[in-house]
Image (cartoon, rainbow, N blue to C red):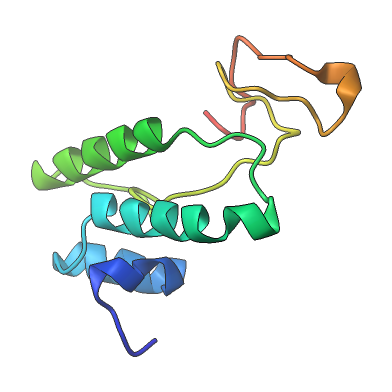
Length: 115
């Protein structure tokens, strides 16, 4: 990718984003903001998201940046945004499995792969 400015961070691969975050060129918050802005730009025509919590995503990105700023060790995915499919339980989020049979279902706990 040529343009690695924060506003175009949505186009970075996970490895590119991680490297720029490690170098201090990009923050998790900037990456998440770029991804959320891109989703907002395209979602009406694509319809990929069953549920999206912009404020929670930004809160988690800021927490990831704060953790990193303390010099603590991080995992390979630390601070990178991920989307969780509507068939995997995420506590407090609608998990309707793309069926009217589960309309309104909100699990109390996360699936193991989420937590």
